[in-house]
Image (cartoon, rainbow, N blue to C red):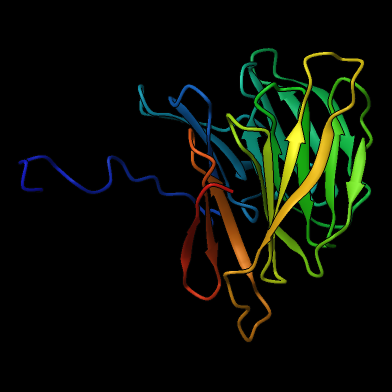
Length: 232
């Protein structure tokens, strides 16, 4: 109990059959999806807070699931295996498309706030950008990290994108997506942030998170530090 006589601590606790590697919120905040890569058909679970329910949307899996996230404004779920990203319509319970990354091991994905673009980070040092209206193959493949990419994210308000990797660096890009469909996205390097140190097992920056309204970036590293970069 806090000084204001309110309960602090977990609101709820969920127990799964295997270790959970990731959890991502849906934009409206009532749903979140969790991924347990070793759980087979139960690797992906969708949870609804208001009703206290958990659902298993798939009866079988195609490859070992790595990570999943929601579309920002449609009932779509993006599910990444090691080499592909499958897009499912949760209402119709059908697969909409399969994106081919051309990479060996996907580690992270994020959907642009417009819902029309997807970025994929991979352990073979690549960042892959998909234009979802254009093709099921990459619009652009970037290779600038020296080691595997662990996390990647768009900012929800500003035209910013960040990627973090085992080389200890976080790269920040200006990533402008235009409402004019005839104009290609503009991707320009802005800064390289090197506040973390790699540890003996060769792990570097493991996660990133943009502030929802400010141009600030939080990073978490294998060195046990959480850093905040402001006004990037």
